[in-house]
Image (cartoon, rainbow, N blue to C red; front, side, top):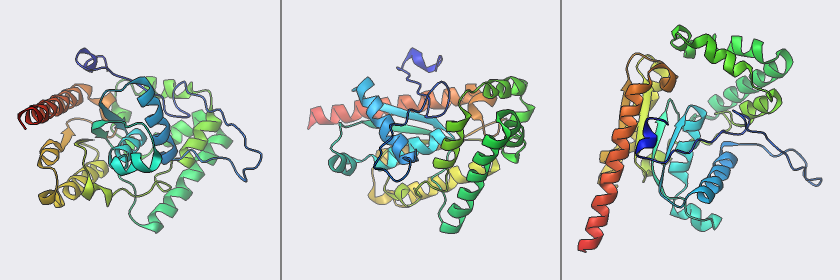
Length: 275
């Protein structure tokens, strides 16, 4: 944010249950169960918050779960969405998807993932945050991060989180297994996307390239400018946590993406004036 704030207004938002955020549940006595804090609900909250903060066009930037939310908003918050929701229009100019996924395609895979994430949430509540973090960062996904010189500092920062009850709830409610699959939506994408993955993150690198193939598979009937602006970037010498492991190439890629979006807006404005 420090690097990009020279030319753009940067707004950083703690997702529910993360950072310094607190979840306040307003209990409805008539409700049968507590409201699920799903990806869809978080996206609606973010939409409302951002439109209250700014009336300008925005570029969404998200990592991991944040990337899933940013992708959901970029694909689903279309003109049809605003008509059905009767909401103030959030003009999404583009989205940067860092180590993100459109979800799981098959039902069996989603059910299995739900079970896994629910089990992790129960483990967090029963064994505490320190034990949970040790188990969490032992996974193959974090092998590159474990070699980072500041790895222990990163873990220590995570261990100071106060609200493990709602952290466990978010882990369960926002499971990729409970998220609707966005793979089919990619074929109808109207928003420029920058798909970022780490060179050493084989799983999400493959997902990024699969997403790009879906995006361009129907490009002949789409917006050629959107197709030209959508790109895949592999950041060298890092794994899943791109922004911590090797931030400078990521900053450069995001800055170039911003510049291309600005050029597109200027070109469209000139075309409107000519016509």
